[in-house]
Amino acid sequence: MNCLAHIIKYILFVSNLVFLICGILLIVFGSLAISSLKDFLDFAEADSINTLPICILILGCIIFVVSFLGCCGAIKDNRCLVNSYCICMLILVILQIALIVYTWLYMNKILDSIATVVDKAWDIHDNQPGYMDALQMGYKCCGKNGPTDYTIIPNSCCGSLTAVCDPLQAAALKGCRLKFVDFWGSNTNLIKYAGMAVAAVELIALILGWFLSSSIKVSQRDKRTY
Image 1 (spheres, rainbow, N blue to C red):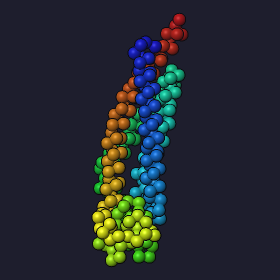
Image 2 (image 1 turned 60 degrees about the horizontal axis):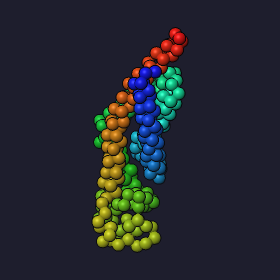
Image 3 (image 1 turned 135 degrees about the horizontal axis):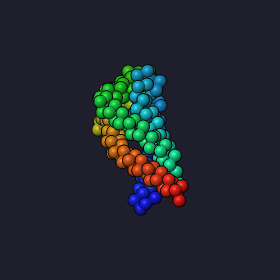
Image 4 (image 1 turned 90 degrees about the vertical axis):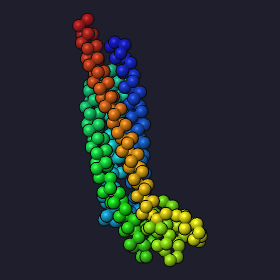
């Protein structure tokens, strides 16, 4: 291979190491998101909000595997691996764009689905206070819309089930519906814009991969000629 091909080879290797890290981060985020919802998945309305974290988790796994394939193909000058990497990367870019478009078009629908978790937890809090307690301690909020929803402020509004909650401390807290939706909205936006940047970089990596594959093919043909 010529000098330019060698440079592209190592650029591709390093960039795929970065993608490996991105894949791991997506796996961690998706796992944490699913874990944060596990206490509420017995709500029928909560089923739909688990879709996005699962998609993120699966996407992270795919990025990890494809990037590993790209690293091996680039460092070993294996055209078969590089071609497989390019095909997988093309599919991956399409899937990421589809996920970004979905979150962009249906952001309000996603957030409405997320809000039903708090609505349902509030509807049953008289008989099953554990769900609201989990929300209030986890998201540092109080009540569905605010502390004024309660006649007597529960201890969980102050982050504990044992210590008595100071009403003045609880008064500064926001409602769980707003905090829960804001948390998921900000993280969804982060995934959306980060996904756009990663998809653009992956498209460049795809082009470099095809170029490297062509260079390996020419190099192998020259060796056979000599």
